[in-house]
Image 1: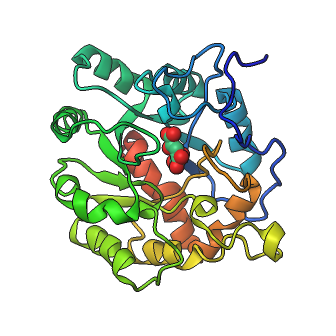
Image 2 (image 1 turned 180 degrees about the vertical axis):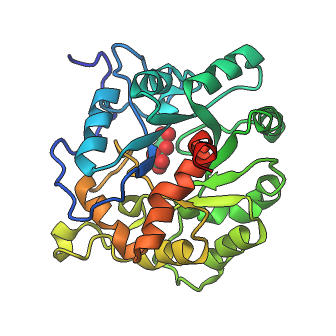
Length: 310
Ligand code: 0GY
């Protein structure tokens, strides 16, 4: 069915026929960062959005999950839906407990609405500091939200650019919950791995044991690009040292996700199968892979499964 919305000019649609990955994800693996868009006819995009995407439905997301050999999803509210979480919540209920959600909420949300989201499977909120995606919410509002969701055992997901970490550091380090950083804080991978900027991110994680990182989005961070440009095995090779450093240094606080359907990419749309084949380059042992894809996300999002086994 056609969307009633016109996509942002130059919009790249998600890859309809991703390759079957060669890397076999361990049983129970979680895609801990993905989104749904609409479908616009059913779940209209927000009037204040900064981009208008193609449709990307829950059925298509679940088909991708199965094709890639994954078991579970964490669906992150996309900014094009603002604080209307209906499309994200609509994924959780029919997933049979195999999807959790990260919401965008406003300060005035009622306790009853928060509780209903918890029952549906929401386990966190996202605070976004990327200017091209959102108008900033005042920090007082964010702190009030964080205090309320802490009581539910939820965590805060933060999205920011590496250059903004120094300014945001004090706010981030006073958050009262686990704090999950999207895409390693978006390092500039043309800068040295041991340079000031990435060292600061490592210090952020080292000094604050409540900080976790998603080692996701090589396709967004890479300057080297996908393998079509450089031959097989070299996909996003410039991102590998950064992600691998974080996985090896903080193996119990890392998550991985596809970022499907990959909003706002300008140069190419990744083959999600090849993104999965990126994993053994950044998590080279079976133990690191199991922590990254199973143990860590299960502990954070499906805690009841851990206590059931314990
Ligand atoms: C991502 C990255 C982006 C967009 C969003 O919610 C969103 O709109 O997260 C981006 O454009 O960098 O994590 O999906």
